[in-house]
Structures are given as structure tokens and as C-alpha cells.
Length: 309
Image (cartoon, rainbow, N blue to C red; front, side, top):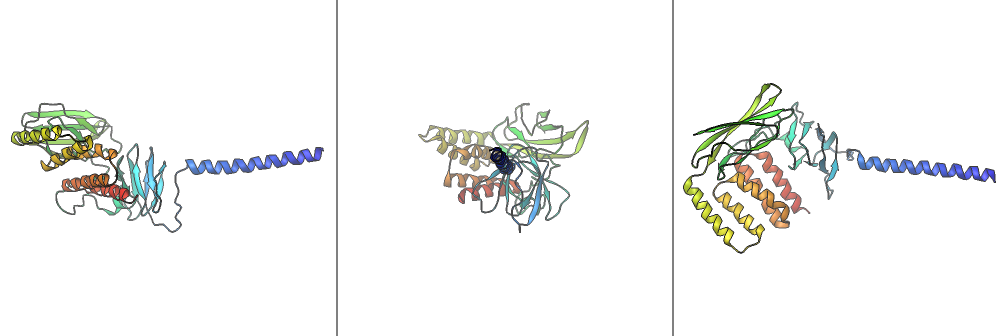
């Protein structure tokens, strides 16, 4: 009887250890960063300095996986930072300069590494979306709103940013530790152009890295015409999403690209199928026209993702 009891106790303990081992492996599989499971894949880049969550989708998979940590990426992987900018180390082709991947923007593992910084396939050029040194200003071009939200891309290890808006009757300066600020200086005048400059500052010294661009206020005549057309849209008996689409199209017709993009980005989560694809393709085209080719390609990928579902 005692021998049987000892045997059963030992067997129970052995089974418990086996189950704990299986459970531990399952737990680790759920919590560890996704590793390279493609034996013959071509590793092209690696996520570095990743503190937040990144979504990754491998070729042939139907859904993104949320991961954390430094991860080597194969050609064809899709990546999207969720809550914090991450940086991409290029392995093929090799580059000493990490690339910046912004929260909410979709990219492939190879695209930032294979595209030369500031590469301009045609039209105007801003470029440099991945250059982590430059606080690239994305509030540029023509505007209706005389209190615009000024936006730029975050710079690695920056303490804060110094912003200047200058032009006729305006010499406004501000500082902020975020990547945007709402202009609250003297009212920007219709028909006038203003220079925006953003410097990244680390410690007591100004950085060598800055960016500047021009903000152009539309004329009084254009503004009146726009408001009349806007009132006609508002008076229509249409669903809110349809009104928003017409409003975005109105901004595009008046060459107010940044403001059109803001409307379309807010609208995209509320629509599906062909409407969502159309919105992403429109945003992609607007970014192309502004010279932001990295953003253009990001929204092309978004449209392809929806189309492939």
C-alpha cells in the first residue's frame, strides 16, 4: 500500500512538472516578442529603441500581432507603431542612420531602408519623414484657418522644440515638449504668407537640426467663396459621413490639403470597404502632391490592406 502511494505521488508530481513546463512555454509564446519564424526569410531591418507596442503582420497572415522590444524584420513584414515612435535599424541595405517610424503610420520592413532620404520622384519635395534628426514640419501650404495647429515630426532625444512664426505683423515665438502646438499669436491675415521654423533643442544648446516652411493664407475672395460653398453643403439633407466627404472634397478644390487630410483621417474609422479605400488613396495622393512620399506610401499600404481583406 505504501509502495503504491509513493508511486502515485511521484507520478502526480511528474505530470505537474510537465504541465507547468507546457504552460510556461505557452506563456512565453504569448509574451515574448515575435521572433523570426521564416527559416529562409531575408532580414532587412530591426526595430530598435522600442518602448511601446508595435503591430507586425507577416506575409500570408490575416491579422497583425502586437509585440514589444527589439525585433528583426523580414522583407514583406508590415509594421505600425501603436503608442510611441520607434526607430528602424537598416540591415539591407546597411545604414548607420536609424529611420523614424511614426505612431499610426503603416510601413513595410524594407521600404524606409530602400528609399533614399529626401528622394523626390516628381513634384514638390519635402521628404525626410524617416530622418530622425529633423523636426520636419507637416503644416505647410495653403490654409483657411487663421489659428492653425502646427505639426512636425518628433526628433530623437529632444528636450523641447522652439517654434517661430514670422511675417507681416507677426513675430510669434513659443516652445513646447510635444510635436504640435496651436498658433495663438496675432491673427494671420488673408492673402499673406508666413514663415514657420521649428528647432529641436536638447539641453541648453540649440540643435543643428531645424526645419522651416511657408504657410499661405488664402485670399479674402477665396475665403468668402469657400464659406458660401460650405453653407450649401451644411444645408443638404445628407448623412454626416457624406457631408464630411463633400467637405473634404471642397478643401481639396481650394487646394487646402492639410485641412482636407485632417477631415479624411477623422472620417476613415467610420467607413468601410470601398469608401475607406478611396479615403486612404485620396490621403496618399494629397501627401504626394505635398512632397511627403513616405506618408504617400504609408496610405497606399493602408488602402491595399483594406482591399486585401
